[in-house]
Picture 1 (tube, rainbow, N blue to C red):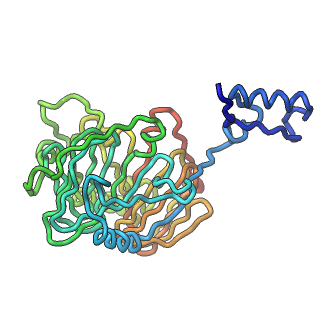
Picture 2: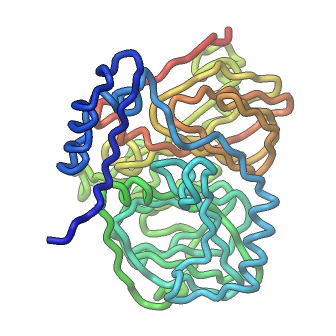
Length: 371
């Protein structure tokens, strides 16, 4: 059998907590390498740190720069079975060039020219679309055409056929969020091609899923069982906006209904369970009233935010930025986050929290709560 170089490297060091360096120890370490063994005592600081040490870094992407790049791609890159989607993924600078916003979350800008079809396919990854501006594109999920408009959140569970079609005379861009990095790491990914076009040119005001499920507090008696992901394919902006407005109005009336003063927030939920819309992804919307600063908060797991409207300032760990409409930023695990605004700011957020909660690994800490 030909000799193969071992990928294992065990370094003998003269350090506190380590065995005394000797020729016998050196020989033992070479044996470990040959037998593909790694001693815990040389690795425990890396494998079991006192708190999470994410390889991902806090980072901000400017919407104006992303949109300019997407527009150029729209001129140069055709749609087809090569790449399936004209989507440009956010690459966190701490993840060695991988197309991942965080170790578990994928975020991308997708761009569709007038009259174009994004081919139908399905994949095991759970996904959503969030629209920060524009309209005219329909996403068709298992034959159900769903309109996409500014402020709409459109979740789509894994292994459902879906394609997109732009019926307008203008291009449109939006963000895609998926659990691609998580499924890639766990080696659980499946993918299958479908037809080249969305399959329908219907453009109803409301999708079939909305007609059945978008009635607050009411569910059809024919669908009483829980589903692992939401059957509702569109959460419309007018409902999100109204819920946030009412929270701040109630707060002004003296009722303690916001997460902290001036900070209204809602979570998109599965109407069959009341839980998260997707098994691996949580989505929320946050509104900061003018002259609001949040308490510093950190949690296990990571988040990606997009500023929907307004402007403000944020601090993630040791990094700080001013952000405005459309800008995206990544918050790695256990990095402290503080948000502030003088004029008011709306933010869409998605996280990997469902994974951490199911594994009983979720932990959070709020520092210096505002009063």
